[in-house]
Image (cartoon, rainbow, N blue to C red; front, side, top):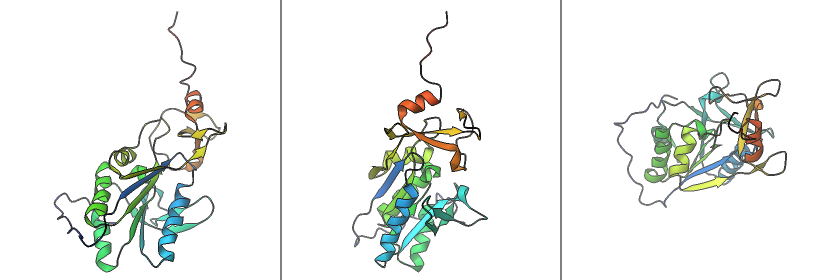
Length: 218
Protein backbone atom coordinates (compact mmCIF):
# COMPACT_ATOMS: atom_id res chain seq x y z
CA UNK A 1 0.00 0.00 0.00
CA UNK A 2 1.49 3.33 -1.06
CA UNK A 3 -0.50 5.75 1.11
CA UNK A 4 2.40 7.36 2.95
CA UNK A 5 1.98 9.65 5.93
CA UNK A 6 1.38 13.21 4.76
CA UNK A 7 0.84 15.76 7.52
CA UNK A 8 -0.23 18.32 4.90
CA UNK A 9 -3.04 16.19 3.51
CA UNK A 10 -6.29 18.17 3.50
CA UNK A 11 -8.99 16.84 5.79
CA UNK A 12 -11.97 15.26 4.12
CA UNK A 13 -15.33 16.98 4.36
CA UNK A 14 -17.59 16.08 7.24
CA UNK A 15 -20.51 13.98 6.13
CA UNK A 16 -23.25 15.69 8.09
CA UNK A 17 -26.02 13.55 6.65
CA UNK A 18 -24.61 10.39 8.24
CA UNK A 19 -24.83 9.28 11.89
CA UNK A 20 -21.78 9.57 14.10
CA UNK A 21 -19.38 6.64 13.78
CA UNK A 22 -17.09 5.25 16.48
CA UNK A 23 -13.60 3.87 16.88
CA UNK A 24 -13.64 0.46 18.58
CA UNK A 25 -10.77 -1.48 20.13
CA UNK A 26 -11.28 -5.16 20.94
CA UNK A 27 -8.25 -6.47 22.80
CA UNK A 28 -7.16 -9.74 24.35
CA UNK A 29 -4.28 -12.05 25.08
CA UNK A 30 -3.03 -14.45 22.40
CA UNK A 31 -5.38 -17.10 20.97
CA UNK A 32 -8.57 -15.51 22.28
CA UNK A 33 -10.28 -15.59 18.89
CA UNK A 34 -9.79 -11.95 17.90
CA UNK A 35 -9.38 -12.67 14.17
CA UNK A 36 -12.34 -15.06 14.21
CA UNK A 37 -14.58 -12.35 15.64
CA UNK A 38 -13.28 -9.81 13.11
CA UNK A 39 -13.99 -12.14 10.19
CA UNK A 40 -17.45 -12.97 11.53
CA UNK A 41 -18.31 -9.28 11.87
CA UNK A 42 -17.03 -8.53 8.35
CA UNK A 43 -19.10 -11.43 7.02
CA UNK A 44 -22.19 -10.02 8.72
CA UNK A 45 -21.69 -6.73 6.89
CA UNK A 46 -21.23 -8.40 3.53
CA UNK A 47 -24.20 -10.71 4.08
CA UNK A 48 -26.32 -7.57 4.28
CA UNK A 49 -24.93 -6.17 1.05
CA UNK A 50 -22.54 -3.76 2.78
CA UNK A 51 -18.88 -3.17 2.00
CA UNK A 52 -16.27 -3.95 4.66
CA UNK A 53 -12.68 -2.80 4.17
CA UNK A 54 -10.10 -5.04 5.86
CA UNK A 55 -6.52 -4.19 6.86
CA UNK A 56 -3.76 -6.22 8.48
CA UNK A 57 -0.13 -5.58 9.35
CA UNK A 58 2.50 -6.06 6.64
CA UNK A 59 4.47 -7.96 9.27
CA UNK A 60 2.13 -10.89 8.56
CA UNK A 61 2.31 -10.69 4.76
CA UNK A 62 2.95 -13.90 2.88
CA UNK A 63 4.80 -13.09 -0.36
CA UNK A 64 3.42 -9.57 -0.19
CA UNK A 65 -0.19 -10.78 0.03
CA UNK A 66 -2.37 -9.65 2.90
CA UNK A 67 -4.69 -12.11 4.59
CA UNK A 68 -6.51 -12.28 7.91
CA UNK A 69 -6.73 -15.90 9.04
CA UNK A 70 -8.25 -17.61 12.04
CA UNK A 71 -7.11 -20.69 13.93
CA UNK A 72 -10.45 -22.36 13.05
CA UNK A 73 -9.56 -22.27 9.35
CA UNK A 74 -11.38 -19.25 7.91
CA UNK A 75 -9.59 -16.44 6.11
CA UNK A 76 -10.21 -13.27 4.10
CA UNK A 77 -7.91 -11.15 1.91
CA UNK A 78 -6.92 -7.82 3.44
CA UNK A 79 -4.97 -4.73 2.50
CA UNK A 80 -1.55 -4.49 4.09
CA UNK A 81 -0.36 -1.53 6.10
CA UNK A 82 3.11 -0.63 7.29
CA UNK A 83 4.07 2.06 9.80
CA UNK A 84 4.56 4.62 7.01
CA UNK A 85 1.07 4.29 5.51
CA UNK A 86 -1.63 6.91 6.02
CA UNK A 87 -4.74 4.90 6.78
CA UNK A 88 -7.05 7.91 6.63
CA UNK A 89 -5.99 8.54 3.04
CA UNK A 90 -6.26 4.83 2.22
CA UNK A 91 -9.88 4.71 3.40
CA UNK A 92 -10.69 8.09 1.84
CA UNK A 93 -9.35 6.90 -1.52
CA UNK A 94 -11.39 3.68 -1.23
CA UNK A 95 -14.57 5.72 -0.80
CA UNK A 96 -13.91 7.44 -4.13
CA UNK A 97 -14.65 4.20 -6.00
CA UNK A 98 -17.15 2.46 -3.68
CA UNK A 99 -19.14 3.04 -0.53
CA UNK A 100 -17.30 1.81 2.58
CA UNK A 101 -19.60 0.81 5.44
CA UNK A 102 -17.02 -0.33 7.99
CA UNK A 103 -13.24 -0.60 8.39
CA UNK A 104 -11.68 -3.57 10.18
CA UNK A 105 -8.04 -3.60 11.35
CA UNK A 106 -6.37 -6.80 12.54
CA UNK A 107 -3.10 -6.91 14.52
CA UNK A 108 -3.87 -3.35 15.67
CA UNK A 109 -1.10 -3.48 18.27
CA UNK A 110 1.31 -2.78 15.38
CA UNK A 111 -0.33 0.53 14.45
CA UNK A 112 1.71 3.62 15.15
CA UNK A 113 0.11 6.22 17.46
CA UNK A 114 -0.34 8.52 14.45
CA UNK A 115 -2.13 5.75 12.54
CA UNK A 116 -4.55 5.35 15.44
CA UNK A 117 -5.40 9.04 15.07
CA UNK A 118 -5.80 8.54 11.32
CA UNK A 119 -8.38 5.84 12.04
CA UNK A 120 -10.09 8.15 14.53
CA UNK A 121 -10.43 10.67 11.69
CA UNK A 122 -12.03 7.98 9.55
CA UNK A 123 -14.73 7.64 12.21
CA UNK A 124 -15.03 11.36 12.96
CA UNK A 125 -14.71 12.92 9.49
CA UNK A 126 -15.71 10.17 7.07
CA UNK A 127 -18.37 8.87 9.47
CA UNK A 128 -17.28 5.26 8.92
CA UNK A 129 -17.04 2.95 11.96
CA UNK A 130 -13.59 1.49 12.57
CA UNK A 131 -13.13 -1.79 14.45
CA UNK A 132 -9.60 -2.60 15.62
CA UNK A 133 -8.57 -5.97 17.03
CA UNK A 134 -5.24 -6.69 18.71
CA UNK A 135 -3.12 -7.55 21.71
CA UNK A 136 -2.97 -5.20 24.66
CA UNK A 137 0.48 -6.06 26.08
CA UNK A 138 3.66 -7.76 24.92
CA UNK A 139 5.52 -10.68 26.51
CA UNK A 140 7.16 -8.31 29.00
CA UNK A 141 3.81 -7.00 30.20
CA UNK A 142 4.24 -3.65 28.45
CA UNK A 143 1.69 -1.94 26.23
CA UNK A 144 2.25 -1.93 22.49
CA UNK A 145 2.36 1.68 21.17
CA UNK A 146 -0.70 1.13 18.98
CA UNK A 147 -2.66 -0.50 21.79
CA UNK A 148 -1.69 2.26 24.20
CA UNK A 149 -3.06 4.92 21.85
CA UNK A 150 -6.22 2.95 21.19
CA UNK A 151 -6.83 2.51 24.92
CA UNK A 152 -6.44 6.27 25.26
CA UNK A 153 -8.74 7.51 22.48
CA UNK A 154 -11.06 4.72 21.27
CA UNK A 155 -14.75 5.35 21.84
CA UNK A 156 -15.54 1.75 22.76
CA UNK A 157 -13.18 -0.72 24.48
CA UNK A 158 -14.01 -4.42 24.45
CA UNK A 159 -12.09 -7.18 26.19
CA UNK A 160 -12.15 -10.57 24.45
CA UNK A 161 -11.57 -13.22 27.06
CA UNK A 162 -9.53 -16.38 27.01
CA UNK A 163 -8.38 -18.56 29.89
CA UNK A 164 -5.16 -19.57 31.60
CA UNK A 165 -4.44 -23.26 32.20
CA UNK A 166 -5.59 -22.70 35.79
CA UNK A 167 -9.02 -21.57 34.64
CA UNK A 168 -8.60 -17.89 35.48
CA UNK A 169 -8.95 -15.21 32.84
CA UNK A 170 -5.73 -14.90 30.80
CA UNK A 171 -4.61 -11.31 30.40
CA UNK A 172 -0.86 -11.71 29.79
CA UNK A 173 1.39 -13.54 27.32
CA UNK A 174 4.80 -15.16 27.67
CA UNK A 175 7.22 -15.89 24.86
CA UNK A 176 8.89 -19.29 24.74
CA UNK A 177 11.87 -20.66 22.87
CA UNK A 178 11.56 -23.96 20.92
CA UNK A 179 12.33 -25.94 24.07
CA UNK A 180 9.55 -24.24 26.02
CA UNK A 181 11.81 -22.00 28.11
CA UNK A 182 10.18 -18.65 28.91
CA UNK A 183 12.03 -15.65 27.47
CA UNK A 184 12.16 -12.35 29.32
CA UNK A 185 14.24 -10.29 26.87
CA UNK A 186 14.23 -9.63 23.15
CA UNK A 187 12.48 -7.60 20.48
CA UNK A 188 8.88 -6.62 21.19
CA UNK A 189 7.68 -8.28 17.98
CA UNK A 190 8.04 -11.97 17.17
CA UNK A 191 5.78 -12.95 14.29
CA UNK A 192 5.57 -16.71 14.92
CA UNK A 193 2.47 -17.04 17.09
CA UNK A 194 3.28 -20.54 18.33
CA UNK A 195 5.99 -19.15 20.63
CA UNK A 196 3.40 -17.38 22.78
CA UNK A 197 1.33 -18.67 25.69
CA UNK A 198 -1.53 -16.82 27.37
CA UNK A 199 -1.56 -16.80 31.18
CA UNK A 200 -3.36 -15.12 34.04
CA UNK A 201 -1.44 -12.35 35.79
CA UNK A 202 -0.44 -14.56 38.74
CA UNK A 203 1.02 -17.33 36.61
CA UNK A 204 2.64 -14.85 34.21
CA UNK A 205 4.50 -13.29 37.15
CA UNK A 206 5.70 -16.73 38.24
CA UNK A 207 6.66 -17.74 34.68
CA UNK A 208 8.85 -14.67 34.10
CA UNK A 209 10.58 -14.96 37.48
CA UNK A 210 8.98 -11.98 39.25
CA UNK A 211 7.61 -14.22 42.02
CA UNK A 212 8.52 -15.15 44.65
CA UNK A 213 9.95 -11.73 45.35
CA UNK A 214 13.57 -11.99 46.39
CA UNK A 215 14.42 -10.35 49.68
CA UNK A 216 17.56 -8.32 50.41
CA UNK A 217 20.77 -10.26 50.09
CA UNK A 218 22.46 -11.04 53.41
